[in-house]
Amino acid sequence: MPYTMFDAIEVFSTCPPSSGVVDGAYGRHVAEVARWSERAGCRGILVYSDNSQMDPWLVSQMILEHTSALCPLVAVQPVYMHPYTVAKMATSFASLYRRRIYLNMVAGGFKNDLTALNDTTPHDRRYERLTEYTMIIKRLLAGPSPLSHEGEFYKVVNLKLTPPMDGDLLPGIFVSSSSEAGMLAARALGATAIEYPKPVQEYQGSTHTGDLEHGIRVGIISRELEGEAWRIAQARFPEDRKGQLVRQLATKVSDSVWHKQLSEMGEGNGHGPYWLVPFQNYKTMCPYLVGSHERVGEELAGYIGVGYRTFILDVPVDPDDLHHTSLAFQHALEVAKCHSSSTSG
Image (cartoon, rainbow, N blue to C red; front, side, top):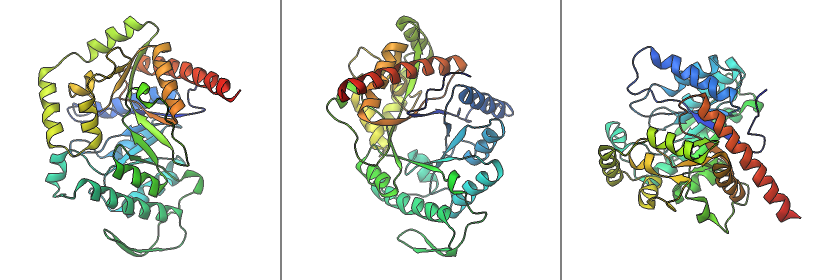
């Protein structure tokens, strides 16, 4: 049985996007990436949701049918469906597959997507709506009594969820929390607060304390040798002037706090492993860590030391990506354990 990197932490891969994929090929690719992720020991896999993607619930069903333990992390945008429908989907999956899913609660999205759907709600108000929306989902799933609720955004009367949700399969809930409004929502919901990380040295002297779980979204390209990892990274994400211009335009029109934070960050310390070129060239939506297993592992150990316990990776290119990422996490956990032992002793 392969080494499982997630006894102390949870790691999720990401499902490939469906936009631009030739008909018929996407389903096979989703199943393939899901199987890679499960073999590597991932807890689950993020499934995107925006106007250009296939329905995330149908994609998640395909993932469930082609794996035995992998948990879909379904992106949920309130503007797309009523909270009752989300709860109904979650309990239906639990009943049909005896599998837990996770919900990645999304307050925003691409500006053009929201405009097309006539959603002009300001940034912080979207998080207030998301909090009420998610609370309804949680209360429905908790059952068994019918739910009546009259809030600022939603009203339901004697609403009951069937089939009932097995308490052991209640969904994990994630909320993007790079902004103050996002963090408030995560706290109100008891959700895992997901952020786009800064270079780990910028967290020196700070730790996450309290009951709230914290996680980060980060891509990883790691190999045994530092130079090999960087050769792969630079070949995969070459400089792209057109992509840079698109990113700059997207930053100007977006009200996303994390988007602006990463755009203003530059290149971190300039020496790696923290690398923003894929984000700056509009090829990914997260920072990357690049380097040897030991170097990337040390950076990951720093995040673990701060208190991050959930890691959402970018889309893997092949099984080797996940294998080498597993080795980097193995080193990270060993470093973190040694550090914890030395400080407690």
